[in-house]
Every structure is written in C-alpha cells, then in structure tokens.
Length: 106
Image 1: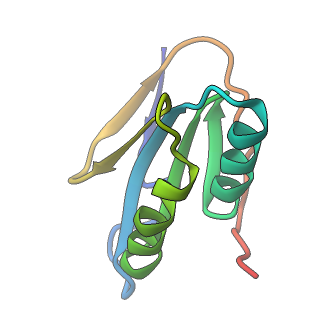
Image 2: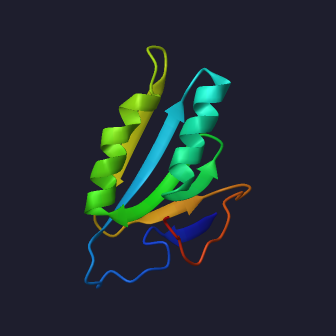
C-alpha cells in the first residue's frame, strides 16, 4: 500500500484557492469517450482508464461542471467528487499516472 497526500505535492497555504476533485466516467461510445478524456487532460492527470484527478481554481472547476453535460449521452455516466479537507489517497497496484510538475493551460 502506498499513501499519497491528495494536495498533489502542493502546499495548503496558497493565495489561490484550489479545488481538488476526482472525475470518473463510463461513456459507451469510443469517440465520445476519447473526446471527453482529451477534454479532461487539459485540467488534470489520468489516474485510471476512466478516472482523472484535477487541481484547478474555483473558476475553472465551475467551467468544467458547465462543460461536462455536453459529453454525457443518455446511456453514459459521469461523476465528479469534490475533495474537501486534508485527506490521504491510499493506492494499491500499478500506478499508470504520469507525474507532472506543472500544468500549462492554453
């Protein structure tokens, strides 16, 4: 078992308040699923085939929430878990996530 602080290596005391969230999805159509994954890559790190961790400003988080319905069809499921407070992530098995020092949004 590996423990990881969910602040993704950032300190809690920053001037900019960050929103930490887990987004998981089950999208049936391959093309739609790939499009949604590309959308999420602009905001966070893929931690599983259908799961992303994001760390963004409140404004960007609200934008993500407004955009998500465009990707969800009638048979699909998308869930967003906003993480609050200081917690730890407990992990087992292979970690396929890509370590990223900085996110650059264009």
